[in-house]
Image (tube, rainbow, N blue to C red; front, side, top):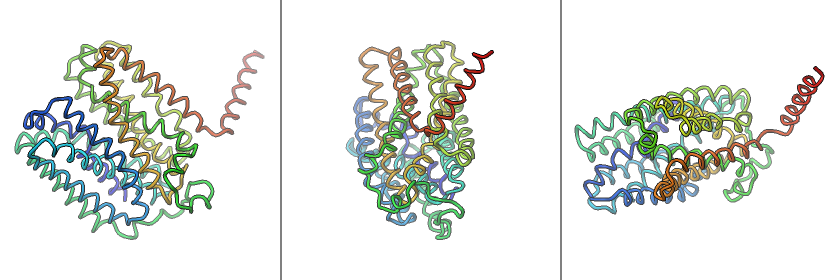
Length: 409
């Protein structure tokens, strides 16, 4: 099941921004599209897929996992082929919609939902390992795709992408994922509070009314919002700082390595101490990263900026996924995760758009960085509400003892 999770997150890359962006220059040239128009297509498709995710994603709680996976794979493969056969501009937003829904949305949703549902004792490790597929895809696939496009063309490369997704996922799902794997891990317990509550069907509107939802929502929305926005404008950031654009490749490699390291570190820690213990603190490295890139001028700051951002992203992806199970239980985790995944996809469309508005207004990155830092501080402060009252009381007691000790001396 862990291999299944890694495979699904890695192959979701074919619907992620960092890979789809490689096809944008070819689409713009062939269909004479402007930057503004292609960005609009992409934004509208992403928002539409985010709106669909809660309705489609919750079916994973009632439809067998293998059936749901194969149906999503069909949609993903069909979207890649539809994209490759594009004959007019209107093919593009339809293809983007299918790729964002099936790739970025449902493939990641299937991966983390299966780890959350079928693991209990080792849930943190399983989620971390499955999440490792994202940095693996980021580190390996862009270079391969660029080589393939250069050799056989962008349309033919999409055929190859579709073939890989269809063959690998279909064969693995049919012949490797057996009924014995689709059972809860022995020795664990459902972390959903009152058992009478976790056995009842969870409705998404009830989830949105809960205090746990509003505790998680700002974090789930902010991280893709800020990181996608900053990644989307990484070349303008480099120009704003006066650096050489060649430093971007090294920075992205540092980000992927730090993200992978933090993902692997997060799993054992979450299993030992629970995700709630880390939730208020995992964004602090990201806050330091933003201060670094805003206030420090030399180009070497690109590396601590990317490393710190990667540490927060990797640790946060495992922490938030595990915390959803701790708050809402395992039985209807698909319904819960589809709602948060929809929010994540929506925020990845809002971030670049909002940053673009700020830049087009002439305010520049002198405004973007302080605004992002201010919002991040608010998110960190509100996440402190997850700390149990007994922990706060214990910290307060220790603080008073230390203070009293210093006063006595």
